[in-house]
Length: 77
Image 1 (tube, helix red, strand yellow):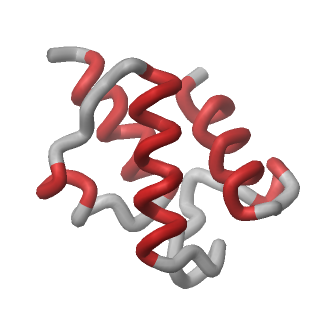
Image 2 (cartoon, rainbow, N blue to C red):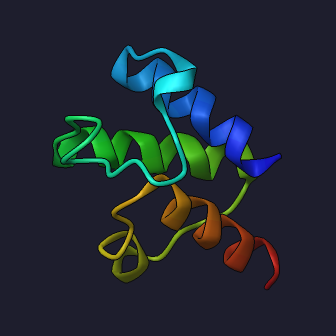
């Protein structure tokens, strides 16, 4: 369920088709996101899931699956 929500957020933010956003997609290399795009995506994810992702954790999010894992980690606290 987290993946589908994240997929939609990323697709909307990056003007992509949802099916182009896969768990293994890398933000910079595959989705052509720059650092500002990543920050915007993280902010929208935090809002959608009502969580706060620590700045040091954001630095380690390079794939869509990393974002899903981080959401699960933060939600489980």
